Length: 132
Image 1 (cartoon, rainbow, N blue to C red):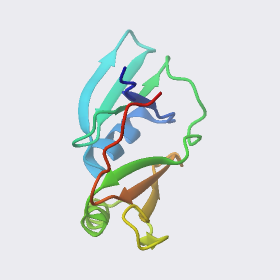
Image 2: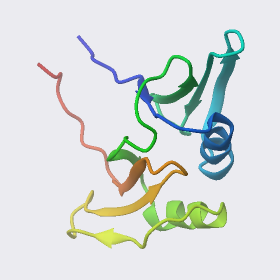
Image 3: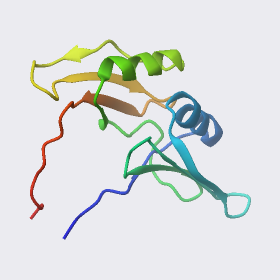
C-alpha cells in the first residue's frame, strides 16, 4: 500500500500576502482559492512538479503563523533554484554544502510569517521499496 503525502498546512497571518509570496515569488501553482462565506477561505498551492500541495486558510486552518519549520523542497540544480528565488525577491541564504554527497547541499528561506523552508539538491533520486 502506498502512503502519499498530499497536503502540508502552512499557518499564516495574512492570506493574500502569503498567496502572493507562494505563487508569485516561489512560483507555486494556485490550485484553488475558495471562500465558504465571509469568514472562511482556503487557498491550495502546489510547487511545480510536486505531488504534495500546501494549504493556507482563514476560519479552518489551525496553527500559529510562523510555526511551520523544516519543510524541504527538493531540486536537481540548487544554484539555478537559488538564482530563481533571488530573482523573484525571496530573501534566501547562501548555499550550504554539508557534505560532498548528493543530497548534502541546501539553501534556506522564510516566508513573510517566519515559516521556515529548506531547498535540498538531489541530482539522482534513489528508488526504494514499499514503506512498511
